[in-house]
Image 1 (cartoon, rainbow, N blue to C red):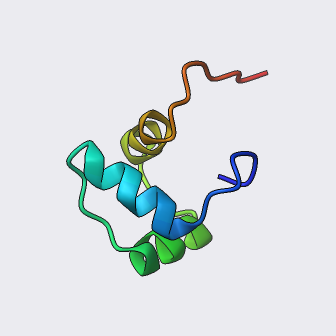
Image 2: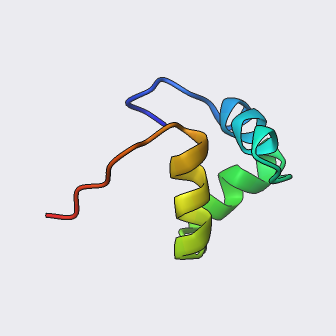
Amino acid sequence: MARRNLSYEDLAQKLQSIGIEESPKNLSNKIGRGSFTAGFMLQCLEALGCTSLRLD
């Protein structure tokens, strides 16, 4: 999100466009705590338009 200069509101809108309903406040809390599933992370990456993920 930081690299793309997006807010939680922007992410919420992008997630909504792929059928995932999350409020910006809920996203902020979930990401801030770090308590989310790998599936949720992949959904966020898809919503942000990421086409590759580097793990090294």
